[in-house]
Each structure stands twice: as structure tokens, then as C-alpha cells.
Image (tube, rainbow, N blue to C red; front, side):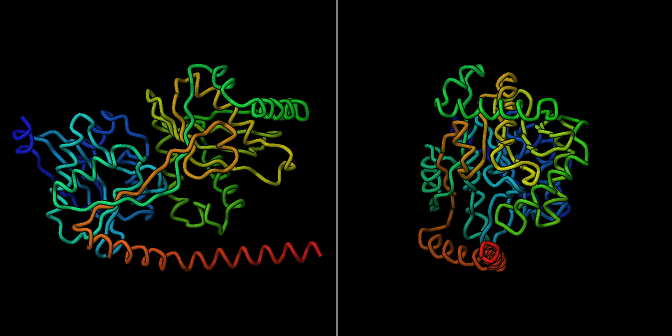
Length: 385
């Protein structure tokens, strides 16, 4: 049976050129529905990113078992000799879609394709949880005469929700419970009817709200490593992806308003029927309230009540470990970037060269950030003297 399956295994490489063909797009949509993929893995997400210039796809690798598509992997070039999975503004979710019913065959098809593709000396398959999958991939690549290795990355932070808000709330530490209750009482006591919380969806997510999200994010992070929107391309992409996701019912925007003005906004992506949701960007107007208030904490407390009621059981807080993630019981899940090379020597050399090239590419931005941080500290010292 295995030999018959292997004889039916084949791959097709579709050059990106001006975008996806309608046939590839339809096959992709059918596959992501079968495997319950997150919104970041949908073809429209990549198409919008490519149209805005956020990412430049190199090709789409399609893995087939007979006439059935069992895997889709969109790739882009890193350098002349290396490539990676496409990551349009969701760098903790690799845009790889593999049918779980034919997972091992799909990866065998991938290794066969890679062995035939001589112009890619090093390939990054993205960031994966540190699970037995990584060990299995190393076995598959060794069986094909290839070499694989991993590089540790920042962990993902996830919350696992029980079946009710009461169970979840009771699972938090006593000091955390008191903190959340105190924050909510503080807002009710000091602002009463002057503050409100909304969960916007669909047509209720106006372009004005999206612009406010981008504006507040720029005010907080402009010129720093955390800013998605310093680049006009990123802002153009996010406007379009929000419009698309809202139209499909894949997006919720929790908003806390004070006297009608939005002071904290959040984007959460969730495919109806799936039990996983993904918090993406949260922003706060730092000029609206003194620092002893925590509108983001109040907003997330309200949203998590709604999320549990909607049947969401796994919630991604993304990468990084700021305080609010641990406050809500977020757990770290280690991740590693998976690389494939043609040999151990080849991979070792190209990995070092590739890292050096990436450092050089980011050097102008790093210098700019360092100079801005230096000027900010100098101004703070001058104002305190």
C-alpha cells in the first residue's frame, strides 16, 4: 500500500508571477478548510500581502497524491541561495498547509522536490513548536539524504481556556484575581457610564476605526522594533486584510471607549467553528489616562469572557513575554526554526552566511533605532536636570 501511495506522489511548482491562478486558489481554500488552518494561512492573506509589497513570493509548492492536494507551501527567496516560507505580518505562524491524513507522504513529497531543486541550498520551513514533529522531520530528511537542523526562537504564549469563565478565573492566582477585579471596579467607580466596551465585527469595523488603530500603534512604537506600521506597505496591507477578514467574519475588534473616544483597540482573528483564536495587535492611547489605569487589562478581561462563551479553548497571545500575557495565565511554548540543507557542511556554511546577510540587511534599521533610543535618553536626562 505504501509503495502504491509513493508511486502516486508528485509535486508541482507554480511560479508566482502576478499571483495565484484560480485553480490553485480553489485547491488552497479547500485544503485550509479541511485542516482547520488559522486565518494567516489562507490564500487571500498572502495575496493581499504580495499586492501591498510586504512579501515577494517565489513560488507555490503543491504536493499531490494522485489528483488530491495534500500539501501547499508558499516560498520566498531570502538570498540567491536560500529560501523560506512566506511570513506576511504573522511571523509565528508558518504558512504551510499539510493534510494530516497524509502528513508523512506530504513531507516525503516535499523532500523529493527539494532534492531536485538545486538552486536552493538552504531552506527555512519556519518556526515550529518543539514537539515530536521536529524529530520526525529530521528522520524524513535523513532518509532522503538531506540534513536538517533547528535554531531556537522566542516562545509562543498560549492560554488554554476551560469550559466556563468561572473555572478560568478560579485557575488564576489570588493576587491576579484581585488585580483584575480592582481594575474593573476602578473604571466603573471613576467613569461610570463614560466608558464602554464593544466587540466590533463585520461591517461595524469602519475604516475610521482601522485608521485609529494604526495611528495609536505608530504613536507608541514609531521607529522601534515593535512597530508594524513604520512602512506604508505594512499599513496598506493591514487595512486590506482587516477589510477582507471582517467581510468573511474572521475578525473581532474589542474596543474600550472613554467618553466616546477609542482609547484601547485590539484585533483578534478567529475562524468560526474553530476552537483556536489569535490575538494580533493591541494598542492604547497613552495620553488618554494616567498610568495607574489599565484599560488594556479591562478590555481583555471582558473579551475573554466572551471568547469562552463562544467556544474558544486555545488563545494565542503571540510571541514575546510582556507582563499582561503572564497576568492572564499565558504559558510559554518553545519554538524552533527548522532548516533543511543538502548536507551538514553545506547547511553549516550557508546558515552562517545567511545570518550575516540578514544582519547586514537590518543594520540600517538597527542603527536608526539605537540613535533614536540614545536621543530619547539624552532628552530625558536633560529634562530631569
